[in-house]
Length: 442
Image 1: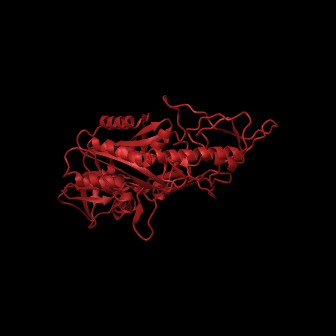
Image 2: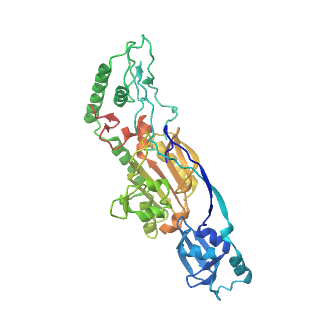
Image 3: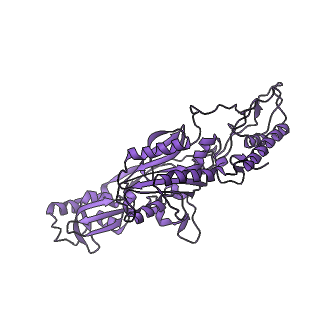
């Protein structure tokens, strides 16, 4: 929920609610299981994933139930009522007495809620600007993955287009409007490295000069490489992983909504709200590659030699917020290895070799996320270009995966943004407005 703008009104409220515990908490607290028939069992062992609990009773029964707060099983364990105890489980009087006398209704919690009377749209203050002295790609512009990045050691230094609020003085006659400034920032390229004269040109003169440069850039691409940067990067990455024994896979772009739930994403989670659902069906456009790779790991486990190594490159879709680092349609690379040698050291080794192959500098930091828990983030300055995980993780059981694994995901548009020094990620995307970072609105 966005809470930015000028007119948000916060209305804090405090009230007391009874906390309904998840089924897993009730099982841990009681150590017993109540069947639909009212038969009380002892629990020998249980394991939990993001969405389910796998239970083994003292009498040897095993089954899987949903980890819910309001299911029949959760209500039964909270109410402490049973018909009789299972004779094969041989429950002691102490265990039964502990279950019967525990009062969950006394456990309450204080909750503070903040609401807004009106959701305001995010606004940007952009006064009219004065363009001074030099040209580069540092002009602001609209744009998938955080933003400003630190300069790297071997990065070429280029002169910058500086956009400042207008100075009301007689010796600064050149003033561009906001729309004119945005037009110039669209036309500017990272390759521009030419100082302007002391007397700044009129807007039309500067626009005409930049349009000519961009037309020349497009003609040069056509005469020389004729390769789209995003397509070329995909082919380069495919070559890297195939040469190192990874199997390329292509999973469906339309997936069941059930896959989203299996990834541990609840309907109230922010990521669930970003999903493009297909009206009239239980399908959606995939917001990530992980479900397809999980399916492949499960099916290939007993077929391919150990370790199983696979990767996929393909589009994903999310209703992302506007910004220089996010796209609603973006391209991901996910690679993973399951079985032997699935260690953190090997994962970091693959990442290091891969980014050296691409010529991208990086550093690794520890982080966590909603889906995978603890993660290894790969950063280029302040820009996250990858998130990596060392399994197993809880939801593995829901996909039938029961071996150690390692994996990482990279945003290709972010890699292009780094490699070509784009300030706006839309220059690296599938776009009708840019080709290889060059505006086509000429």
